[in-house]
Length: 516
Image 1 (tube, helix red, strand yellow):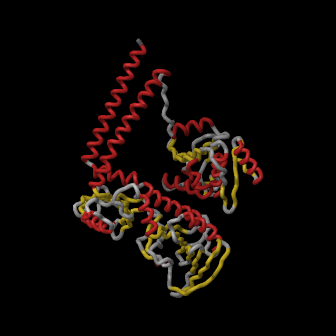
Image 2 (cartoon, one colour; image 1 turned 90 degrees about the horizontal axis):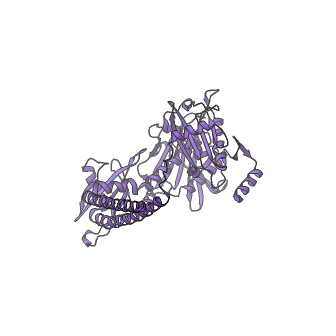
Image 3 (cartoon, helix red, strand yellow; image 1 turned 30 degrees about the vertical axis):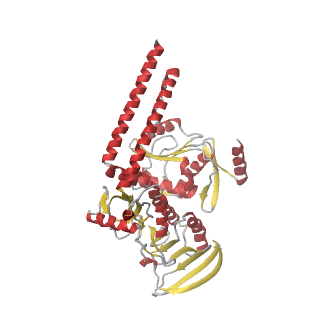
């Protein structure tokens, strides 16, 4: 009798669940069909095109890493081999660039580009004359040159489209489109500048990105979409568009050239005072088209990301897919519900508590105290004895992070003293929360490697009116080294401390770990 009651209740619950899911899907289908433009056009910009935003964000992150090098005194114009050593790998890792440049406010410059398989550097120094010498070197490798030559020119990096003095509000800037002198092709330069700590003036670093590279990138992202994906500057003076991916069955409506569509898009957009929060509707022939715009990234207001799509083709694609997806959802929901009921009926319900919040985890770590898996540090960069920033302070907690990654994981709390008292990171005097997080991430990228960020969870937690930086480390899948200048050091956790291993000890440790 008891089993029958359970079975009846389960069948009723399952039937009700399926009916609710079906009703919700019918409602969503009718809603989307009635209001397709403002909903799905917006979703395409905010979800489907995140890869494009990520690309431009990665360029900004690379610029910030070079800025850290410069602020730490690692970039010297008079040592071209050291500059080659740093920038040859960076150039190869950024396949979309065809040049990079380092220039000072005094007019000194180091420029790197490729000619076939050879590397070429161009160096110039400021003089009192309008004309000065440009020194060129062709390199086989970063420290082996093949050819040297020079020529006289009036070129001055300070008069270029990408040169600008440091700006705290907009640290990374993208130039307008211009023609690169070394390759004679159009492109844009992403640049960052900073004040020099070891010498007067400031320095600018830039990456030259050809328009064809951006167009190729947009076209690859557009394989699954109708219409055109494009970037346009805020004043609509120029645009960069992907290849078009649309052809109507009506020959009169077939569009082969994206310029035809982009002309209509920008004309309509300008007439509407360039909105960035609602779709733009226009006609091309008999076709009704939709275009939607959103800022590319918060730190890059110059560009907007957009998509232009023929409404009829877009609606037919969405209509054909919605019902299939909903039917699949219903089948999965029914199967999962049936299996879930049988499981609950057999073994009883089990409550799975939600994951603890950051503040709960922080309190738990502090209560446990320092040990093999937990370490406390008072500050991120400030020496509390002298009141000044010290590189040794940063390296101290970076060693702990590397040790945790090479061992079984662990947690680093910055803003907690050795006794477990919450002191906060306020003595580090960061301008705001974002600046402190960016500083920590940049240090990790520079000294450990951005490729290992997936093993780290970094959070800034407010507790007792103070802020604690919490870095939770998972054990890495490969050995990780701490890069200090030209040296690499290997650390593991040994009890409550981080222990540096010699090269032979490192080899033995890695081999033992691989066979364990």
